[in-house]
Image 1 (tube, helix red, strand yellow):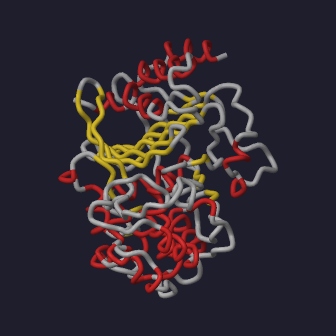
Image 2 (cartoon, one colour):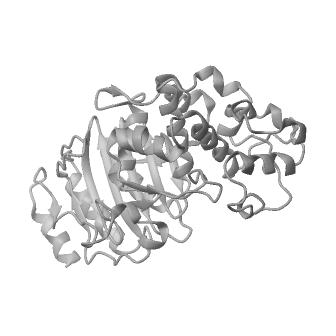
Image 3 (cartoon, rainbow, N blue to C red):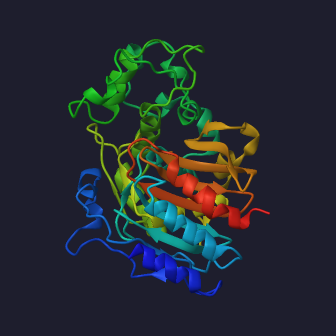
Length: 381
């Protein structure tokens, strides 16, 4: 069947609509909001890939267009062939947005247009986006990024915390430079439900090694974004989950499933699942300076920090700043990346946002490689 579709592509006119089948959706009776990581494992693979260079307008707030630049037919044909050969392992979706419109959409295996896909560490990125929304709404301001984390946590008993904890700022946490170091690798994860919300952080702050300028070095962890989420839970009306539902996911019509930690706040290291179209919307807001569909959704000042290229390559504000090769050129991208091959990538120089999802074992970079090998080169001069 796939070979027949590829053969069909070869005879299509270069600017014709290239679409295979109907948009794949979750099996009847499955609730998208209950598509946890475990539930997604039970989804059957699609019998054949869906792809379109002229995506459907689903009335979900995404403007659609067409991918019809010279070389489109050949690029899609090569992408399908490489995917069929397993070059990108277990690729589930690829979406491409450029200059205001979704122009390419592909699903395979577990990919469904209405099925949230686990985001893994893009959850950290979405935690940062939640903070950007809170700043836009005035729950805190840009100067607060340099205030101590504990200044936002009124229940913390400062007389019992380890020296130096009081120096950890929001900006430290956003750079994975809090300096928190615990007795064991799984210390925070083993605390359980008996330490809800700020009590959880009280235990962390009492059991960390002293925080020093030397310990405030980059260390990729789920604890630092959890401090950000705890502050959201404290400052926002209601809970952090309610804030996300109302002011973050709700404002852009995102379809998602986001689990809680045992302490009662949303998971931050990993633990969220969003549809590919929903992730695309967040990426669009970032590349557009925080604006989405003509309205300021995220703090423009905060987004400027995310998009500032003077930082160089690295991990800042829970976004990866990197250079990758496409069509023989170095291309700069700022992205969320998650284990298993999850990517929400913005390409500022090209005004492109790409989302790719997969359920790979390792091989985290392969889905982005598919985008860089077949789709981005169509726009590289």
